[in-house]
Length: 468
Ligand SMILES: [Zn+2]
Image 1 (cartoon, rainbow, N blue to C red):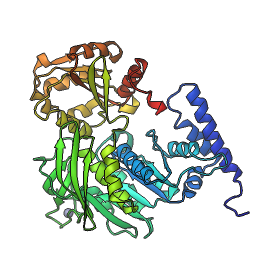
Image 2 (cartoon, helix red, strand yellow):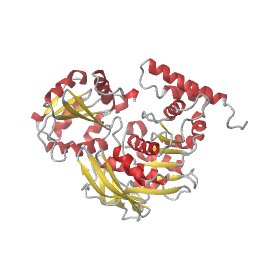
Image 3 (cartoon, helix red, strand yellow):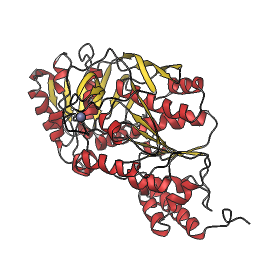
Image 4 (cartoon, rainbow, N blue to C red):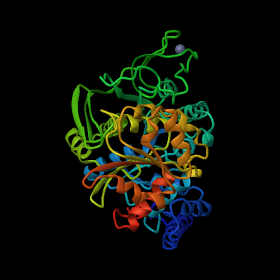
């Protein structure tokens, strides 16, 4: 009997603890049961994640970045599944070591054999170095580093520095797939033993005139001088150069062009790579989803998946929980979009404001731990884009009143602003304001989204998130 097939008792006990406590917690109806089982499993076998991931035949892909992790890793997992691979994926957005451990325990046999050929692992920014150390990734997919949740993580600089230290431990057989339009990511992935390939947007007709005020600044990491952008696509992502030291966006290996945004419906683009062209047409909207698709396609191409299969999967891809959700309720179409940070909120408003906001919108702001306790970030959002439009904007949630104040200061006519009571008491009232057959937008923060999903599930509208 080989050593690898002998039962590892401690590992099996850890897996069992993870599986059983996950089931018990789900039976008790407490959340999705994603983190606590991992905690218990790690207490029994501290190396559970290292051991389980080490047995995944075709390797691990770690996906990291401030925005787009969930969507990108779901896109990539879908592509790999369609390529007939069994994929292990921490789907429910639990992206700390304990949550990833729980996902692996749930998707392994009782003796500790993962039921998958390849793993797509979404990692939290702060946990990233530990995750990389434990799972020994074949590919690391780096999406972006935005100012976000600074109250939780401290300065962006600290994260970038810790990531750099982690990258310096990588080997030449490991691949970093990096968003080259993000100057910080380009800078911290230079001159490593690991391979590096870059993705990004080569050229676009959708450009920002200046850095949005949600962005602190875009400074050169080499010399500290301000970067100059010849094209600015989204937040601090673009084609940049430092006039002081010559640092500039590196040449792109996966280069998007011919981007076409179709409002809230879709986006299409052309991706050039290795002297080939891949045309992608997505059924989900926005420039940030274009970035997610470019990243997922780049990783799939690097893994040797055929381009036709990639285009087909991405064309059929529907939005993940918590991104864009469309539901039909009482004869109305509700478009629900999670807002969780200034950059994401800006992008959502940019989509809504194309041609002027024409349908009623409900913005639900909570300030519980998972939302971020400090709502001052609302002042970093370019709410002013909504001023050009005529439809009413309703506010709700624990900090709904703060949002109403923010709307007022954005120059939106007072007769368009309608503060409502708590979501439980005002949701139907909002639906009433939408004409039958019409549509409305709901923009909730994270915990408000969970509350909304529970309310809708209670009304039989969508499956409960935890059952997905
Ligand atoms: Zn410089």
